[in-house]
Length: 157
Image 1 (cartoon, helix red, strand yellow):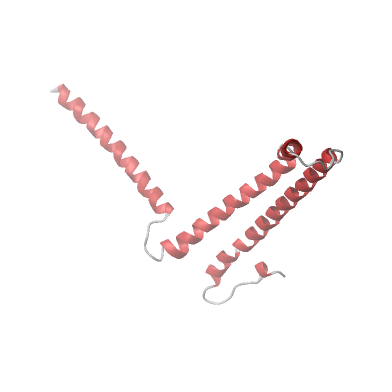
Image 2 (cartoon, rainbow, N blue to C red):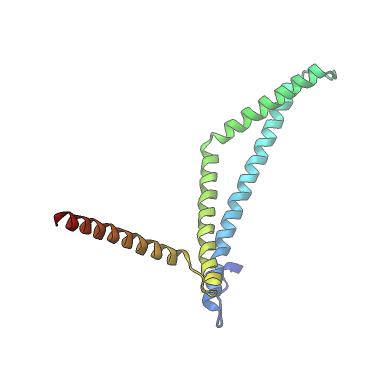
């Protein structure tokens, strides 16, 4: 049993259970993020190896021209290596997972913020604001209809 599976007890059980829902979400995000960092480390090593292969026969002469040549090789090698990686399905899947988990974390964070901060302070939640917006839309629509009817009736006279 891991820490995310420990049952909550006592008067704050419900709040604790809701808060513990974040733990697996965080762990999933952390795992995907660490995999992504590992991938970027591996790509950096690959780029470094390619750079070494391309510059192995350049020699040890130190001059501005030689430094410029090495710099250009370095930029080209790293750019090409990272372009290849960023175009793979593996990278796209990782970014999709990270984005999905970030959206889930944002939803959870919003729910916890509303429940633990906004509601106790009697501040409006997004649900309250949505309800007010729907009612405002309905009222505006009714006013437009009534205005149109008034105009029609005044033109008939």
